[in-house]
Amino acid sequence: MKRNRFINLKAVSWMLLLVALLSACREDDAGTPQAQMRTISLNFPAIQPYTASRAEDDVNAITHESTFHTADIWVFNSNNTATDATAAAYKHIEDAERYTTSSGELRTELTISEEINTVDIYVITNSSATGLDANSTRSELQAATFNSKPDNETSSDLENKGLLMSRIITGIPVANLSGSYDANTQLPLERGVAKIACFFAKESESTQAEITGITVSGATDMGSVFPAAVTFENKDTRPSAANVPEGATNTETVPITPPSAIQVLAEDATLARGDEDAQAYVTRLNKIASFTNDYYLYEADANDMTVSINYTLGTSEVKTTELTLDEAVIRNHYVVITGTVKGGILELEYLSLQWENISSAIGWDATPRVAAWNSDDYDAPNLTDATVGDEEAAYCYVVYPRYENDEHTALETDGKGNTKPSYAGFYFKLDAPDGAVWKAHLTNTTDFRFGTGQYRLESGGGYERFCVSTGIAREEPYQIQITANHDWTDENWDNTIWGAAVEENGREVFTEFYITVSLDGMEDYELVINPKNVATTSHWKNGRRFAGTDTRIYIWQFKATNGDDFTQIVNNILHENPTHTISQFWDLDSPANNEN
Image 1 (cartoon, helix red, strand yellow):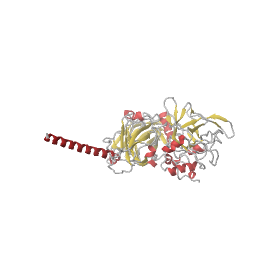
Image 2 (tube, rainbow, N blue to C red):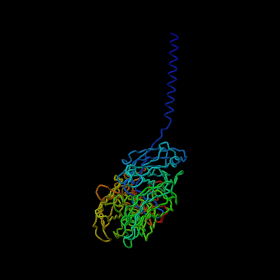
Image 3 (cartoon, rainbow, N blue to C red):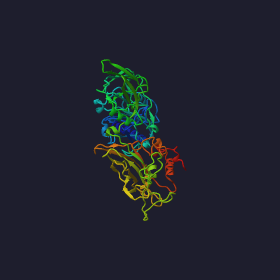
Image 4 (tube, rainbow, N blue to C red):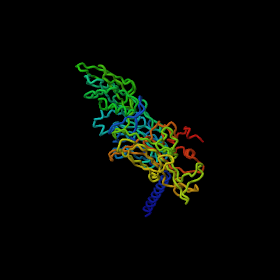
């Protein structure tokens, strides 16, 4: 009995010790903080212009050149710049078309640690690169190459696999990636290839000319997956140099199928580019010249590629003329070669044009105009001075309640204590083609709506027209009004319940405004309503008339504050929060923003 009692007491002792150890482990575990996570929203627009060395405007892409099929996204902590660093988050999307909006944008979300405040994003779509996965390091991604692409626009690979598109954008504030699924910063991509086409004509019907062969020699055998990295501030800039991968050779030959016949030039016509934009030039070439398909090329350094064209002039003698591409062939370029038969000689020239993808998909050139509404003359908006006209439109924000006087010291009511919102009034004109239907959209309809007020066509005239958010192409412009749904304060400058909640949560109240157009009522296409380098005076960076991107205008709701004008309100916000979304667009160096 004594022996049994000793054994039982020993067992109990061991059990108590084990319980104590387990308890200590649980206490240790409880003391280890769990990482807090946050969701970031990513928006990759496919509609991107292609930088040109010899032109400053865009040429349209063709069907399937902007389609997303697959995507791989790496999100790195900007504070960890080691070349062997791996991503803080990674996502592979096998069916990217399901994540693509009707306007062609790839949108998705990832989760990262709340401790990360700035990120570098690496993204590849339609990748043919091998060996890349969630564990790929920065250096491995930057050195990645690809050697598979469609041969030309007729290739089934273009439709089924698309073109590789990619980008590295560094130093992105996480605050700019926060928000709802479809209200986020656009991160533009670049296609990984250039393309080339040839156009031919002859001056006389009597000239018996035939193109018998076209060859591009010295073509590169592979391409870099990524262009050179850009900072978030420079995300809208385009590549200016070829990124030819180490180890690439210039031994490839690209045969181009020539046209079956050569058109005759009309009197006084020429294949040379005149005083016309790039798309108008290419459209004209398609009408007056015989042409090849578009063929895709990897990037190459200057003088590496030579285009050889064989032709006959009514005899069996084959003549050859050559053209060396004396500028680098850079991704996003459209190399246009023209050949004119003159007096028994084929004269060649070439241009490198920007490559874009809106109009050709529609089948026509849409040239909309958007400006701040000018109430003094409805059809005379100031297209170069973007600081004049409707104040809310020019500043891209509304207030609710709105100011009652020019001193901004009182808020307007209807006499019964009900406040009124302000409206941003935009001039919009689309006069071609006949039958085109346009529609305005807001990404945040919880906080914003379109106004339906009336406006007059001239100073002192009657209020004859209603503001609308959809219409047809016509000569007379429309006015589109945008306003807020919620009052931030009452008439005494005191916060409403809604206003207090916004401030407590630190929520930015904004929407993206964009316009689509359709000819058939089925396919909609976003219009370029906010291009760069059009305004000589503006509140916004890059010569844009408004805050935003090429196809989107950002509209905020801010709180009206006693005695502060529109410029001061923005400056106050940026002083309190330098990373506010508006900081991406507001031009701190603009004289218009430094008048006080």
